[in-house]
Length: 163
Ligand SMILES: Nc1ncnc2c1ncn2[C@@H]1O[C@H](COP(=O)(O)OP(=O)(O)OP(=O)(O)O)[C@@H](O)[C@H]1O
Ligand SMILES: [Mg+2]
Image (cartoon, rainbow, N blue to C red; front, side, top):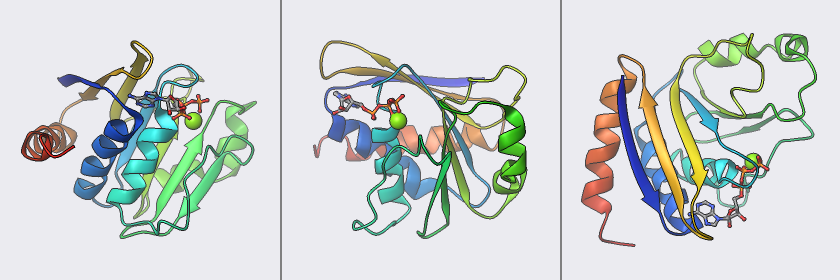
């Protein structure tokens, strides 16, 4: 497994990391977000949407009450949040599997909410540090996500001094 851990020191830096990843994603990508309330999962997704060229007038908010919000970008973005999901059946009814394997990018907040729901994708674990810092660990299990993670590290290093 490839892993990479870094720290961001502001919400905007976390968005930027998401943005750099968003620019690299291809069809059928799955990004699984882990972390407590307020860890920065939605913040990261906002940046990812930017990287997918979702229009700025379509703000990305937590889809807690709807389970999934779709956004139109360079590729479709399907933003799931499983926090308030009651049963995995509800996800199945929504056609979750079709989204995962479809042409768009699927992002899942609270991806570990249901142990019986086994998901594969690039994992992003966000943990609180001091007030504005977050430790972010990215995990890729095999390819092509391993290569994606390498590209992300490279692009982050190139753009790293700008912000
Ligand atoms: N370095 C940082 N990265 C991300 N968010 C940060 C950072 N520092 C402070 N914050 C703040 O932490 C909060 C993160 O909120 P966000 O909604 O993204 O969390 P979440 O993980 O999606 O929570 P929830 O589980 O409730 O959906 C925001 O208020 C943001 O401004
Ligand atoms: Mg959220």
